Image 1 (cartoon, rainbow, N blue to C red):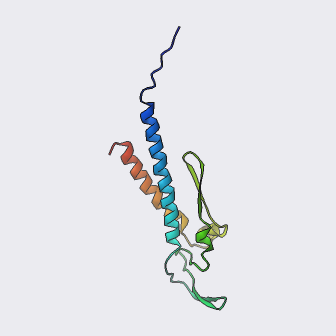
Image 2: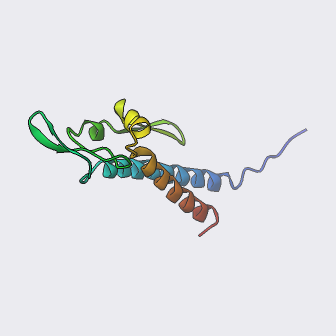
Image 3: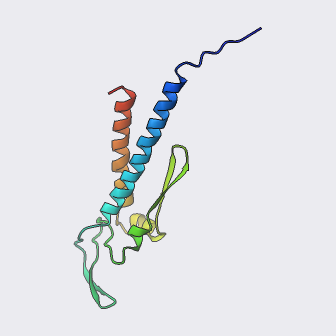
Length: 127
């Protein structure tokens, strides 16, 4: 008894999966760039003094104001497994995002994910 298995078409599927992985990787980098962008610019919060230097804090609802740049430089994207990436940052980024009403990371990642889904749908539909 013999069994014949036709694997034609798997090369096409493999190429599509590789392309999707590249698109996903690009989305992660877009997210990282978006988060960094959220941490840039001027803020409208209270003017304070930090170590003798004037500092404009962020107002509730605004991205965190940058004082030292540590949060921005702590951002790292890591490929954990195929199709699985992780963006990490300094521990206090989560506190600012969730507890202090200084959104920056989720806003950028939601925007990048929405764009990624649109691009992926167009690609899978052959557009």
